[in-house]
Length: 467
Ligand code: UDP
Picture (cartoon, helix red, strand yellow):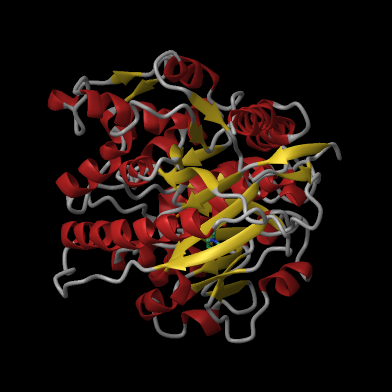
């Protein structure tokens, strides 16, 4: 049952087969796909699973490799009762438990001398029950966490019962790094708080038998928290999971996540548009793939963009466009471009971009850090509040915009924050210098013998040795 493959150094190693299975959301699939590419580059054979619902809006397009297969399994609900998040999650779990079990049974029985059977599944930590499905079929498993180590540490404390979120009586929380978090810096769950908190903390269940816990961060970025967590959990940092061309360049042809989103921009190409702009002259605005902005928040942003002379590229999903005031697009077309989706990595690495107005989703935060782009943080929910705290006060690569009592960042606060960050042309300031520092450290982490590279290498070697 053994096969051999070339590892990154060209030597032949015994090949092992892993399954990688992300939760069907863009921000979960892209880091796990990127992690998969690193595993393949070190000689593993890999099957990437996506669910049928994800396959309707996303396609995988990575350079062909005999070591990479992908497979669609069903997550279609068996009942119509999926109106609430709780009902959706229960139905998702039931459907996927069945289809994943069938898939593993099939792949284990059909494996032949030519096909190495999988021995381990890297599952998205928000689906902890995958561990049981795998264990029943004799597979090992390793969760992959898609949030920062700091956020995971906080959620682990909640899971263990030593922290409540929101905290009683506005107490402050100290992290191992002596960073003090005010209540507004803790993860927040404005919608369906009990269900979402349970979903997030359940990531720490089923960890008793796992030997590896992967986190999409890097040691230098969160060293104290990582060291603290590593005292009780077998965590391994493996990030940032950004295409290699933007960091170490060691993975041939790895220039994009390879997760294509079927969204149209009515023929507008943001990159061509950026090409026509001066160095560091454009503000890039995006709130990721899920956030729905309030009408008031859109109004404050549009007032800002109409009443100032900022050039801007704004990603606003099709469903959000109705919130724009009449004629806004035409009135600002000499300075601004609104698209429904863009290749964010290409945008962030474009020299015309001066800063990133962001919701601080963890992928966006890591991308900005890895590409050296200062941030203006307007966090909305879950981990974004904690990420924004780190952006502004720990890594000092940005400013967090103050919100009013209705949780809206008003025009004046937005403008003041942007002006603190932006330096025109080739100028620099503390935020830009720090951003460049983190960019270099991110590259170092994934480059040969960097902390994340070593962790991935150790995992692959251990897996191969255990087969
Ligand atoms: N993204 C993109 N184009 C866009 C907006 C977002 O490619 O126009 C990508 C972005 O690069 C990131 C992901 O979508 O990888 C968003 O993930 P994040 O964790 O930042 O936020 P979420 O969407 O999960 O809230």
